[in-house]
Length: 580
Image (cartoon, rainbow, N blue to C red; front, side, top):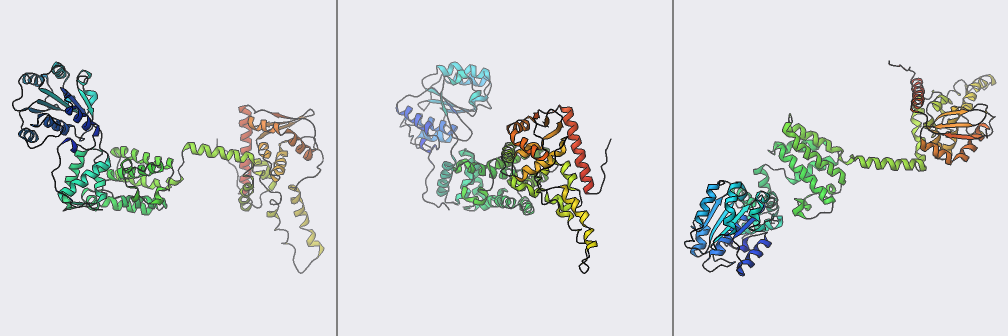
């Protein structure tokens, strides 16, 4: 989209030409029409929003030969002199250069004389907050009771530095930052008046870079026009000013989204080699991620986003979550602060881009805690019990000759997910080796029988009626856990937390590693009692005790760790070394 010439007219210098400050314009126009002219005005606000221009327009409105009027003619002698800055009755003073009390005393002496050719003698003091305390004090009485032909107009960017005694004697008007779309429209109108064609994207970038300041927008616009040769394009701006284009940033993010770190780094190097500085790349990447975050928060106003939504691919807009984009923005903000002390800022930027490859897999601590809680609830409720038998199969294939009974006793938690029919499979292949096909004699067939039969008895499928056991120990737990795992009963997980089993003539006692496991066992005491009776024949009372003291618990955990280490050493035909 390009703006062409539609009309050629002079830029207005009236109140109607003051864009983005409707409240100030309407208030001053009404006060002039009603004849309520104050003796002191205080214009405050950010830089480049029209404070000094408004003061000059107000001076012309008060001293126009057809006034006071909110619409000065601009052609009379008073209006022309004020516009040219050579009026003897409109005095502009730089508060940053004239800060002493002596400068204010000169003003006190001058106000005693009436204006020479104008209706009002107007003093415009810019950056008034720079005056010294003694200068402010010398100005107090003059502001409070000035002659009726004197008007003071103060302009400042820092209202808090102006004493309250001065502010209370002035009518205060706060100027706001000009919205991006208004600046863009004014620049388009200016381009049309100057006979210059301008792309919509280029004007949008100039308005964004001005950050609400119309003066900055005009300054940047004049700079761009000087090298555009009558056609303002975004491509020319990127080449001449060394900017990272939005399409190049999107290419880097797109490569990172596909986890192609090499392509992303190559695109980054091409961008840096084209003349874009490291600082500018960091700023553009941070702004890009910020825009994605705001879009995720349902913000569509382009003046807030700082980028046009249509220029960002849809796949990138939907790729990352809110917390991932927050982490990316924080990464680049921290990087911009740290590159001042870096050995090589380019290395820092490359490292940051490389880390963004795994941005889609990043999660905050709050998310991880929530996932752990969900997994814990699913584990206790038995929803994920079907996936557990697959975890033991790699162990069987790695060490088929390891004794099954030794693995069961050393890792009681994993035993809960072992299927009864899987364990004997690794020891079956040696059976047919000594039996040749052509000689079916009874003697060679009887030889492997003693080797296979004892192995089958080590892990029985499900004991139906075992003989009573006089003394019950912790070795009973794997059998109980195995049966409950086969029935998909989550209570078997509680038995895996038993750290000690004691048995005497009075009762059978289970000591658990946590209070939660103990309480769960008590709630299912009848089921556990029936299970113990089925395996051991014991039908006496069962007690569930609280957690052991820390010293005993540590010793028990150490014993389990040693057993597990011995089992692993046996699987890999090694030995356990104890370092002192």
